[in-house]
Image (cartoon, rainbow, N blue to C red; front, side, top):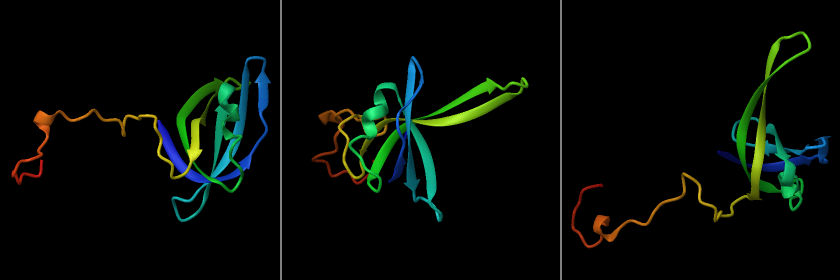
Length: 123
């Protein structure tokens, strides 16, 4: 699971790829380096409408999975491609109620707490 903040540059129309698969793409401007990066994300199936509440120019946080595939072209050569599959969009700066592996923690039992101790150890 990955996430990135950026500004919506462009939102494309939904595409019905075949009778069982649809996708919608959007471009996010990410300013984490000296030069802006224009990153293409895709939403698939029931997630295509997640971008509807947002407008170009808005700053959002995109939660996504990195996908990689291989396929054989007409000449029989193996080719590879990547896609960034967004699964959650939220306004930048908002706090999510969905626990993630990095933010989820169990309550600390009182017996492990250092409350009320004069211990000066850093741990």
